[in-house]
Length: 127
Image (cartoon, rainbow, N blue to C red; front, side, top):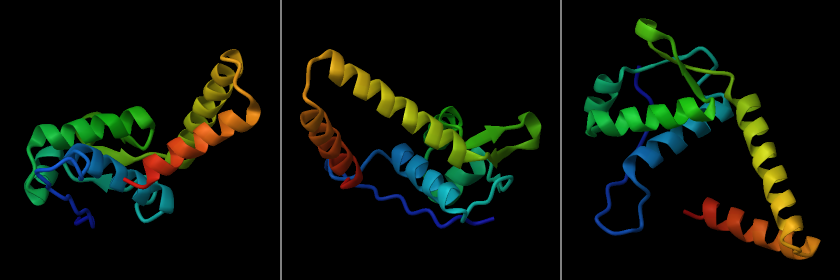
């Protein structure tokens, strides 16, 4: 199986780390349904070879994706796309709740807390 993954290698600080690019792209493909739940992913070594990356880079991305609930490893059976949408939504909602509570404890006005959150989201999505 060939996934449409493109890793930008940049000597400067403009491009995200290769493992982060891989993590982001697989996560987006899973959330969009382009990678359906239950789809088997390539092995770490095979995927690394296909992408021209070190195996440790792919392994790091897979660990992050598993931590995010996007993929699941089933031992020797391989790595598969999990029901990521619900897990990602739950994690995002929990992070948003934690941020809101922290902002309130710090004494920020609601408008200021929302503005800071919007700035953070804008910065994260413009990378």
